Length: 219
Image (cartoon, rainbow, N blue to C red; front, side, top):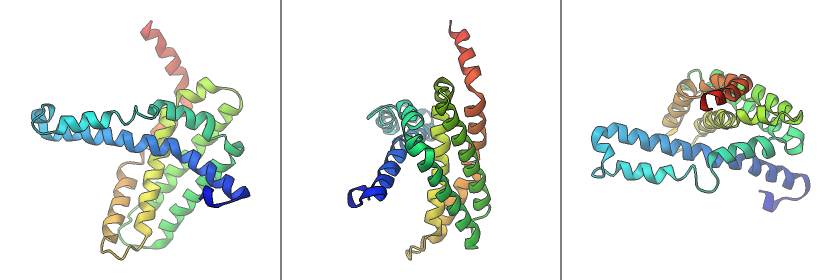
């Protein structure tokens, strides 16, 4: 989109790509490690040896959060460089778009969504409050405090996007006979995964001091 736009529109899409890059890198690769680790667990003891191939899949997946910049570095980049774009205006506008998506789910009246709209709205509110806290902290020069929660913030943002994009898929009428499945997947994510955002919000906003104090245990 940036390549085919000019002026303010070009800047908009450049900033959108920049904002989403660390999230696109980190969230799927972390999930790949979790899934391949679960694959070993499913196989039991046989999963830990080479016969099943599960151990190889885990090793292959494990490099992804490291390659092309570790996910921890991606989180620092998200906090330090991507959120402050246009004085924070871009990420704020993006959150408005996500909130509208939750409202679209609420207004759809399509069977099967369950409490998806309510769960999405709550998670987006967590993202908004945490984003404002991070922007304030970085704007005031409290970088150590802000960066202490960088990885947790990246996960919070990623969970919200997971729920929102699955809901967007559920709203689409694909004409392929799989609409109900997409709605069911969106509902599962909303009702089983994204509630973690509340805990992550608390960790980001209130966890910096305890993280600094934990250094005493390593002395």
